[in-house]
Image (cartoon, rainbow, N blue to C red; front, side):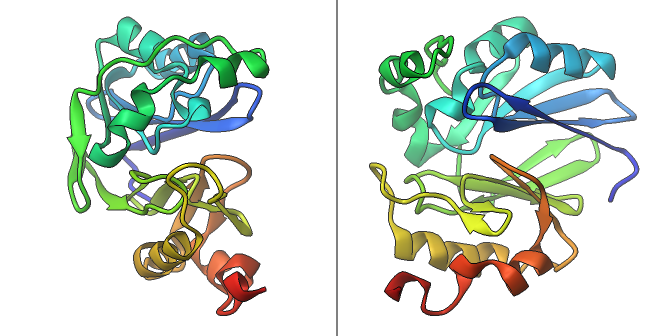
Amino acid sequence: MNQNLILKGLEVGPFMSNCFIVGSRQSKKGVIVDPGADAPDILREAQTDGLDIQLVVITHGHVDHISAAAAVKEATGARVAVHKDDAQQMLSGHSSAASMFGMRFDPPPEPDRLLEDGEKIEVDGLSFVVLHTPGHSLGGICLYGEGVVFTGDTLFNLSIGRFDLPGGDGPLLVSNIHAKLMVLPEETIVLPGHGPQSTIGHEKQWNPFLKENFLEL
């Protein structure tokens, strides 16, 4: 892993979503991935390393990954980036789902940057590639670089994202995981949207949802 990389994870909100703070030790510029809730905690953690947050990246537009985006943007002035196919999903009404679980929900800001597959996100010597992996949602993405891959709700430790929500597609999700993620180096650290981290090698060997006949069971 790049020694210039600052990487921290927080579990936020009632859905226990993972939010990640990524930054450069040299420049102290940073990115927040999936500010799902608890904006004060996220901002406090970023401030402990003196990071100037330049960008907020949303892996997909579901309520448990975007609820603190507005507050983080307001506090930092960061731009917000989401895949073009999930921009509308991010902006659609989530307040009823949030209130059901007692979440504070501020309507998310309009995205400043619409991401596409293969695009690069650069942070002063750190580089991450956008991998479009629809199946959990139409515009779901993963971010790969510096020895890690942020997988949102595409791939979990020994599981995969659900595909019974609007925009979900099980065969497409599994196909994208194989085509975009299982080809990464086996030592790549998997940082999912929920639950503990893993590695590509571990998932390739043990994830039951990636077996050949999973969708036929």
